[in-house]
Length: 178
Image 1 (cartoon, one colour):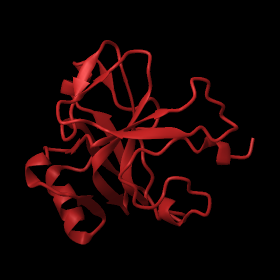
Image 2 (cartoon, rainbow, N blue to C red):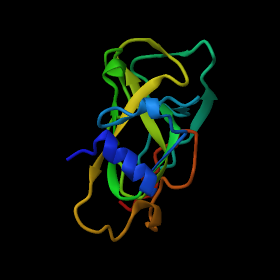
Image 3 (cartoon, rainbow, N blue to C red):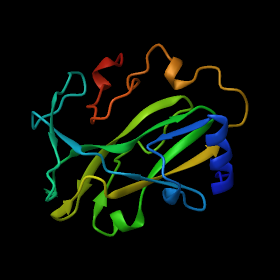
């Protein structure tokens, strides 16, 4: 089951869902539209190693936009900071984004109960495409959770993507034990 617009509004009123900045016009019948923040990042090395800390360089999207290139991975961020305390948030690309050949997440479309942050986007494209800060990029949908949550994400000792950060965050895979 997915929360309806009325249910999303009720959960915002209760404080179970937080969206900043919030604009009622971005609320769809069962989703909330999120926008591309002003920062992108690229990895500094062309060979990434899952056991090492792969560093990134941030840059601001200029007013005239930025042209994404195929075969490159860009990390972006949502303009919106979100908190989800009683539901599982899913981030999906908008159909208009997909129709431009832009993918906004490779694998990380699902958040956890207790996720509190802007969303880092794993952006790729199939052909060159100009993007702009503030453009609609995706939509959040919310699924109810059956049962009590024992360990929300923002309370987990090993949570790697917590804290308010309005810039893209690189992979923290290297913090895992393997």
